[in-house]
Length: 236
Figure 1: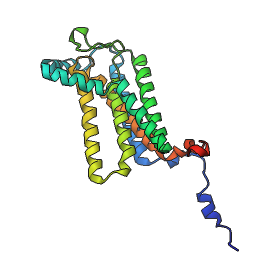
Figure 2: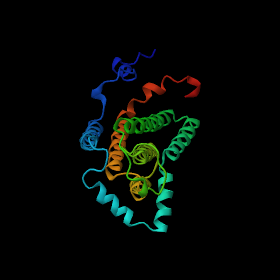
Figure 3: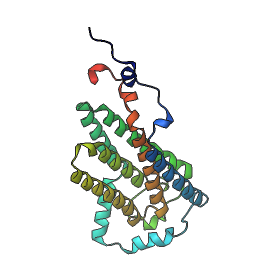
């Protein structure tokens, strides 16, 4: 007769409770660094309802560069990184992954995207900062300015999609994907300045908050099975 497996091996297969000590140290440090930088920036911006520091001069520089061709490109990039677009990217990715039964990846993307939307909504509501003068706007915006939802959403969604796909790509493809995603996020943020609808500190806050939430989600990634293991067996 076969002897029962050793107790040690049996323990390894048992799901144990989540502990803070289980989180990767690098992920925690990156999340904290982004959070600290964001808190400092917000404390500087919050008391003012307008530009702070170099906001005005930097925004004016972008406005001075306007041409018909650049305007058309900026509007296209801004649309590609708006709330609706990044939501579509996320939903499509979740649908495809769920269909292929990659539930952990689908849940991770859903959490990251939904969190980005919530952070944008409540962040704008909390700070309630006015946008730059309407006379400088090339597109219509009706909500508050801080943080930039385009910068935040594109950072989170582009980052999480690349992170999920990275293990399945060759190193060269992965480096190319990271480069394209980074350039896309930067272009989306800068397009908002060119269009005159954000102060530079709005965009910086969007990048910082997006990076903070993205690294937090990736840090928790190994523990997503705590959710997906509860799915009905026939779905897994």
